Image 1 (cartoon, helix red, strand yellow):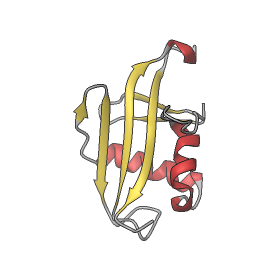
Image 2: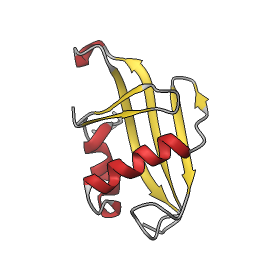
Image 3: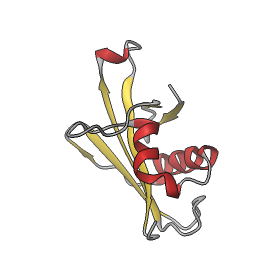
Image 4: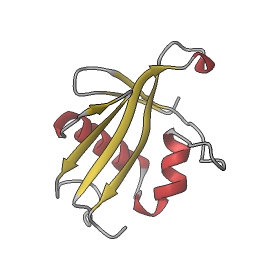
Length: 114
């Protein structure tokens, strides 16, 4: 486990250490974010703060088992960003053995050419 966040309705959303993408298997969590968006991350303290801000103030429609929160904002830690996307699932995976949801799949900034 890396950190814990809460969704727009108080959902338990762990940000797990996770795994990078491996061939046709999609990764999730901190390692997935780092492998695809490391140049956007000034620090994990800032990234976690922006994830919380996006979950708190973004629009968060659900499609299937995934919810995608989108916050258009120029008040994020990445000054070049026009917004942030956070994708999460409340699905519990028995492989985690902690009975908590998979949680945050990915988070990234957009609108900045980053």
